[in-house]
Length: 407
Image: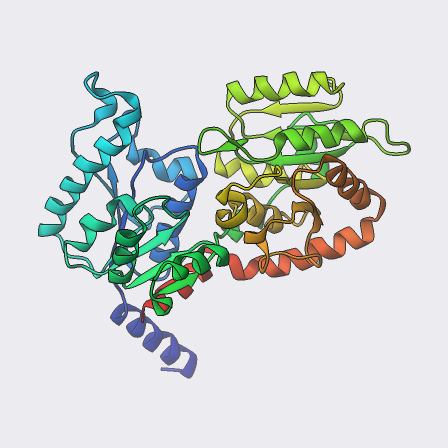
């Protein structure tokens, strides 16, 4: 056997020896058009790609058909999915809507404990603090990935964190705050979200992408691709983007067209009304609904400039929690980016990879967009640096670091 073949042989043996049985505990409808569903699917796929046996456990919820998840997210079937049966309050008239999630998690937690009595895993991976207590009771090792921190019950929450083998905070401000509450710093790491780089390796050429999306070829396309709001009502900066486009409308020598993708019918109507009030017509702006994750690379390829805006807000989401999937997808697209200068994003992007601007300031956003249009060489240098940067944020590299931190 030749040396390269020997190395490959022993590498395969080592990979098998280190193979873990991992259960990812999902807590919501799956699949879903919301970003957390894609994040869940990508985390599972990455751990499986690293050689582990991964099973995603998901609750029974109205309208959820987990068997469609692989096609929905455009993933190969390298992990398994099992939907646990339990009482679903969303299909009952006896439980008020506002209590639906709490009641659902109660019965789902019971179903999980029953299931895990008969099924042993080397690792339980969960991103919902609501389920941490039930999983810790099983005695199986738990990794808790946090996308926000609770407003109440901090002492008990910290106790749960310190019983986990690892706590993954999405941002450094989140980690700092959790440690200030009393969490063991040796158990808490920071890992932002990631991106599937393979999805962006074959995106179409810009002209063809614009034609496919029926976008004007004689204007600079300013794109926003992602959800319009988070946590149902928290606006993410689309309003400020519309205001910036209105300020750019009368700009001499260059014409812009705003294309914003990912809103519900309700929010599209709200924002189109706002756009009309700001003097923007159909030839200036278009708002579209949700698209599948498989369609995102082609949509980004149709844009000349991508914006990640934010309102002026003291909400913890903007000051502590956000690690947006779309920012990593923007970077992977190789397009110039205007990005709100938010505390959680420091250490991820900076002025060498994106054009930063003040949150909640349409004039600053407009000026940043115009700066990219007028200084394209510098903008392309930043975009190229962003492409190099995003390599370290692939889902596989992210999950490799997390699983290594456990050891």
